Image (cartoon, rainbow, N blue to C red; front, side):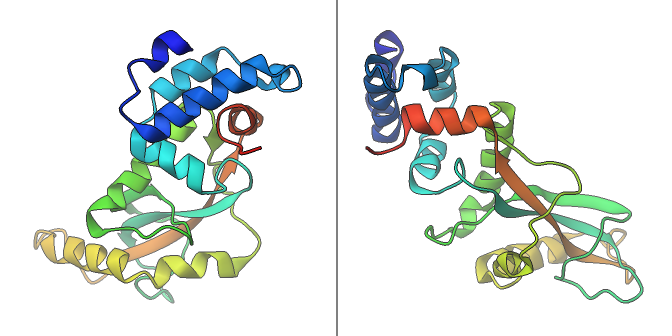
Length: 193
């Protein structure tokens, strides 16, 4: 771990994870929670992603996320609401927001790539057709002004052939769930004593 850490000493969030991993590996009570792959996982995280892992509960509990699509309207649906998937295409494949973090306009797509990378590393999963039972957890997606501005700009930029009265922007509820491996990673590389 120390050999790999020398490449990340400039990034504080990554350096902290490596230091925590080394400390966990030398602590006999945490030794069983230290996996050899954790060094590689840290090396595959962007500083932004490491900071998210350190400052949110994404590796501890299920969190609401959503897929944002430009798709065919159902007869009773209104734009910028939650619906089931229908014919169309994704604008943002998986999007997550955290109550304790402020998202800038230019960071919206970073949050989608964050989830792609965390699922690729098997720290989290986004099961198909799974959503959290507390519907109120999803309301923040409909009320985020930066996200709404981004989506309105997207809609405006569509070519005239793509614009149609039977399609609009909709949200699909999803959930991101930490894996057992992700929880181990949190214990070994992030958790504060």
